[in-house]
Amino acid sequence: MQITINLPEDIELDDAVRQQAEFKARQTYIMELLRYGSISTGYAAQSLNLSRLEILDLMGQYKISIFPEQTPEALAQEVAETRSLIQPLNNCYRLQDWIGANALRSH
Image (cartoon, rainbow, N blue to C red):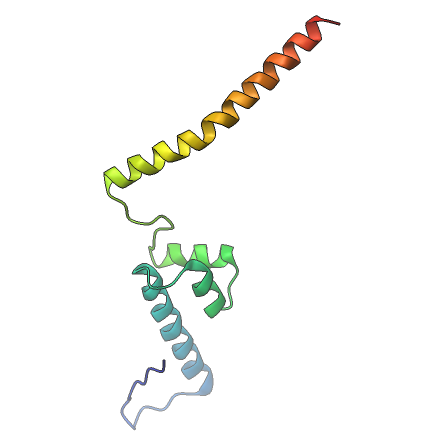
C-alpha cells in the first residue's frame, strides 16, 4: 500500500525534515492499524524495526492498551479459564511443600 500526500509546490523541505515527517506518518498509520486490531504487535514492531519492548513503549505513547477490549462477561470467562489452568499447579506446589516438610521430620 502506498499513501501519497500532495503539498503545495511552494513548500520546500530539506531531506531530513521530509524523512522525519514520512517516518512519523508511517509510524502513526501502523499504530492506528494496531489500535483497531488490524495487525498484531509483532507485525507492528517488525514494520517499524522495533523490539517487542520498544513497541510496547510506543503503544503507551499512542495510548494503545496492551490488553484487548473485553466485555465484563468475556473477562470473567478468561479469569475462570486461567484459574482452572493454575489450580493443578497450586496443588502440585502444596504437595511438594508437604513432602518437603515431612521429609525433614523423618530425619
